[in-house]
Length: 163
Image 1 (cartoon, rainbow, N blue to C red):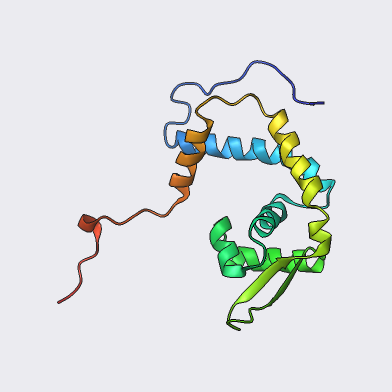
Image 2 (tube, rainbow, N blue to C red):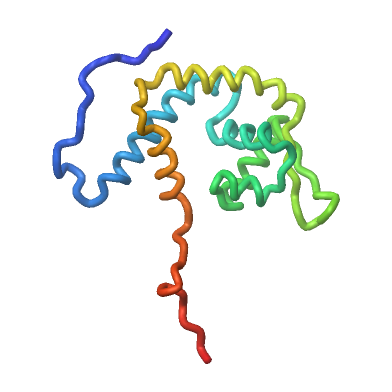
């Protein structure tokens, strides 16, 4: 059952956001996506960032906090408090990696594992509630990941070194 109101889609007026239409469209899309996930995840006691962390852990098993930050594009100043709250909630445990004590390994707990199947249903429900996506969806996702990647240096742009 969907609670989405069908009605006319409001396209931005030409030239309405001349400075950065991409940023504006991304902002609107991110808010719309979050609004679909938020109430469903709240029913599981999760926030969207916690859900994303758990998705990585469910996919890869135990990972280092550095690997988790790289996968989610989060810096340690954002990730550490998130993991601390998740650990306090009983969703993850953190421990020093056996192979290198400088690294912190993060693993989903049994409590988090119990959420895996209900969380899968959340993702399915969100996909079902979204408007039908065009055939360009996969291209859009690929381009968005390209935009999120750090720029690649070309040989012409490499900084000159002092001789």
